[in-house]
Amino acid sequence: MGGSEVRLSFFIAWMVISVLVLGVLLAPIILPGATIRRLEPRCEWKVRYGKECPMCGMTTSFILICRGKFKEASAANRASIPLFSILVANEICAILLLRRLTKEGRHLLLAQKKGTSTETIPSSNRQQGGALCRS
Amino acid sequence: MQVLSVVWGILALCGMFVAFFPCLGSLNWKNIPFSFVGLIISIVALVTT
Image (cartoon, rainbow over all chains, first blue to last red; front, side, top):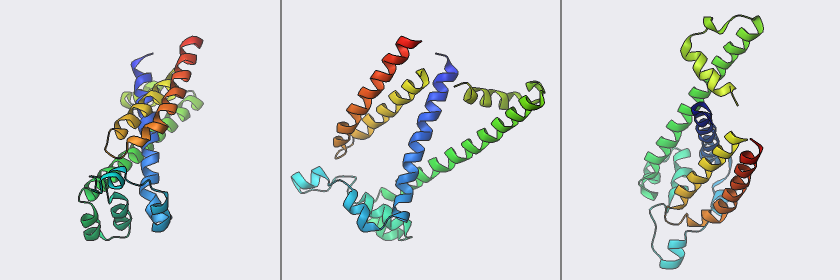
């Protein structure tokens, strides 16, 4: 198993995680708050010891962030806004990279159809596209 | 098949790290069967290649 295949595996894993994260980010927009609260598991720490854990209030704050209530979200859980920002940044990076790779893949396919050599395609593009095409 | 098994392993590792967080430990109940499926896929990939 070559290095390009390992890189491809990491890329696919990142994309799968990004799709799951996208679901987490879109759920408060699509589903009503009561449905999300019914679906979420109860905090074991709170049930057993009656104390809040560091992640307690995260669902509430994500719902509040999606409705633009940032102050209330920060009050529910302080780490929610930085975590939400990191997740959004990850989604933006994933979408931009995926767009770039699909564009390069399309260029490679067109070049193959026309019968032109891959020498006309910039070397950086050839490497990226090649790594993804070799599955 | 090899790529699929590596992807499966990476996802199982990510699940394991998430399950290290307090209160998210119950994720292991889902992660262990998931990893077991990955193990089977890896064995199949190893045997067939």
